[in-house]
Each structure stands twice: as C-alpha cells, then as structure tokens.
Image 1: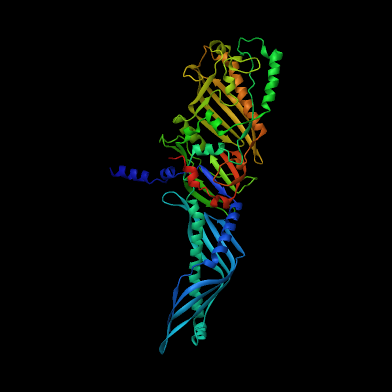
Image 2: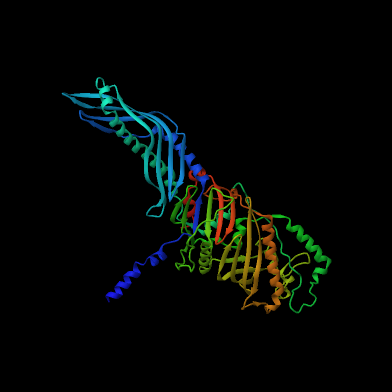
Length: 577
C-alpha cells in the first residue's frame, strides 16, 4: 500500500505530466520597432502635458532643532526631456525612459525651531532638477478575469542632479541651507521620485492598460468572417471578376469513342464560347448578402477562438506575446484531437511590418473540426448564387450553359426546371500549411433538389484534395489553385448513372472550379484594409504561408487603435449573446 501511494505521488508531481497540462500558444503576435516608436511618441506627448501637473504630496522634514511641514508644491517651470522612449527589454519587460528633463519646483513650509526658545518659522522651498533621467520597468500581465494590462514593476530617478534649498526664513535661512541642505535634497529627491513614478504609473494604466482591458479574450468566428466580407462605407462592395465555367456539351464517358464533343464542332457553340469570354471580362459586385446565400456564416456564431494571453518574451528589437489559439464551441464541449505546436516561434521576414501575427494550422484545423461536428459547414447553391446558380438549369437554349449539356438525363426527366444544391462535409476538413502553399483535404456530400421544393433528385458523395499556392505582391495576393484529387465515392445516386458515367461531369466540375478561382487569383486579391471593418487600424498588409503557420503582417496606427471611438469589446462581442 505504501509503495502504491509512493508511485502515485511521483506520478502526480511528475514534471513531464505537468508539462503536458501547461497550455501552449497557437497564435503568436510580434510587435516590432515601429509600434514602440509610436508608443514613445504617445508617451512623450503625455509627459509634456502632465509634467506641469504632477501632484507632489505634502511632507514633513525634521532636524535636531525641530520639524517643518512642506506643502503646496507646484512645478513652476520645466524643460521638455530630450528623449522619451518605450522599448522592449529582455527577457519579457518594457523599459520606459525619460531623459534629460529639467524642472523647477516651489513649495511652502511652516513649523517651529527650538533654539533655546521655540520660534515659529515659515518660508519657501526651492527644488531644481537638471538633466534628470527616469527609468520605469513594466511587463505584460493578465488580471483574474484574463484581461491584459501593463504591470508596473519598478521606477527610479537614475540620472541628473537635484538641489533643494530654503528661502524667506529670516535669520534661519543660511543656517538651514548650510547645515541641512544635503539632507533636504536627499529627502526631496525621494519625494519627487515617488511623485514622478506615481504619475508615470497613472499614465500607463489610464492610456494603455485601461484600453488593453477592452481587448477580447475570445473572438467569434462569425465576426471574423463578417469582418472580412462586410464592406466599409468608403469601399462600397467588393469587386470580383466573373469567371463563367467552361463545360462541354456532351457527357464524356468511357464509351465515347470520338474523343470530341459534337457541340464543340458547331458554329453556334463557338459563338457561345465567344460570348462567354466577353462575359468573363465584365466585373460584378459580390456583396456579403450574396456570399451568405452560399454560406450562412451565422452558423459559426457558436465558435470562438481563445485569445487568452499565455506568455510574453522580449528582445532589444521586438516584443512578442503568445495566445491560446484554441477553438471552442458553445454547442460542443468535446476537446479537439489536435496538439498545438511546441516550441512555436515566428520566422523572420525580409518584408518586416510593425505587427506580425502567426496563426498555427492547429487553430485552423480546430475550427474546421468543431464546425464539422456542429454541422456548421453547410453550403447552399441555388438560382440566386452568383456565377454558379445559372448553370443549374435542367434545360437551356443553344446560347446558354446548363446542366443537361453534361447530363442529358436531367433535362429529360425535369425539363425547364432549376436545381439547388446542399453541400455538407462528412469528415472534418484538414489543412496542412508549408512554405507558400497549403493543402486541404475534405470529404462531403452534395444533395440535389428541385428548387423551391424538398424533392431530392440526387446525391453525390465526393472527396477532394486541393493545393493552394499564394504569394504577396505589395498588398495584393496572387496565387493558384489546383485540385490534385477529386473523385466520387460510394453511395452515388444520380439519375441512375454509375460513377463511370459521371467521369466527364466530374472533370468539368474540377476544371470549372480551377478556372474560376485561378482567374481571381491571377488578377490578384487586394488586401487594402480600407475595405475591412477592423478595430485595429492596419495598413500595408501582407499574407504569407510558412511551415505550419498562416502569417499576417501589417503596419499599425497605434494612436487611432487606442483612441478610436469604437471599443474592441463592443466590436468582438456584439454577437456573443
């Protein structure tokens, strides 16, 4: 029994088991020099405004001859510091430096001095500070409710000279200055240090910590999607190029010996292709409402990304914080099967921006896993869906493209009708990210209905493997998409056709999707943040893919971010309840 308890206690306190339970970050944010340069300018402005308003408390100084009370301190003059800086300081702190500050402080004194007899005295205290330097050390912490704030660690006057003397004390003036000037200077230095540091602490809490507390501890997946889709008042609607699919007229089955489509030999079909090319050149507007018809992102409102602060680290050049990045659902409390990366470090980039955010593929796969388990990955295509909806007509004229061009049985059984699709996943999609490319694998089912009814007319189970390559050119993302594998699985029920009969239809779908996406990626997708309703004031964004990481780099307007009218909390949490 004793041996059993001993083994149990060893296991309970095993460092290996403890290490496994320590949360590991899957999102890392690195703040580079530009952010601290802006923060330094903000602090410099605050110092300029607040220095004349420093509140110095009353004090009492005692000598062998008696005690005097000093009160009514005020800064009568000062010279701005030559340098105010806020910079990262290893291993995980920030250093606020105020250098080369001059000031002149006056105060009133009153009390009594005992020289044979007790004499009441009054007068003035003058304190001058020249080339004063102040250093304050802070670090990033979180409160009991996981709100980030700047913790004030230490503060001191570590440079310059301070001199204190009294005046207007009559016969005692020279005696006090000669005998006790050093003692008064030392005590006044300590008093001023406490007052100045208290003022710096108040400023950092009021202008930084109080605003940081509004940062979200979790972010709704629905909000993230809507934020990307909903245009700002300045930008209007997002613009995309029309990419009409290229479908062959006749189904290409193994029994097709000609190798050519008869329709492709017709002049009418050639004219149709020419009209189609002209149509591709037109620009269409794709609003968030149109996107929501295809994918109702309200279904993601129960998914949240945990932005809880886990660690912080600093070098002399940057300051980085690690956030949880775990995804949780209010509908499903099951833990996801993935493990966060460890150790997790952001790679260095030659195109360095002020702010760098690395999202591990762990977070993306966790979100897809929870979305699949809660049946949130549901896509709907009907006649109102841009670009694709028109293709779901069962029959059409010669100058149109429709489903019966590929599968005649559809038009024969349901002439002059419109189909609609419901696409849902049957396995959680998975993303693997490497340098400049990502591979997504997924399995799902496509259900075909007669539009406006609940009459199901077909089911196509499928599996796909998609390769996406992206690279940034300035603030424009270009790339390519290739469907490396696309096949129909067991359980096909589509107008009595076998999987082999759908080979041409399958290849057309594959070609259509590749063509449609590649046209958009080849033209480039603008990442202008003017089109995004972000609480962070970002500019010059860059998106890139690194090994296991989705990287977002951007410049940040820190002043607008901290002092904007719309607070973080109302933005990120307006959909939570």
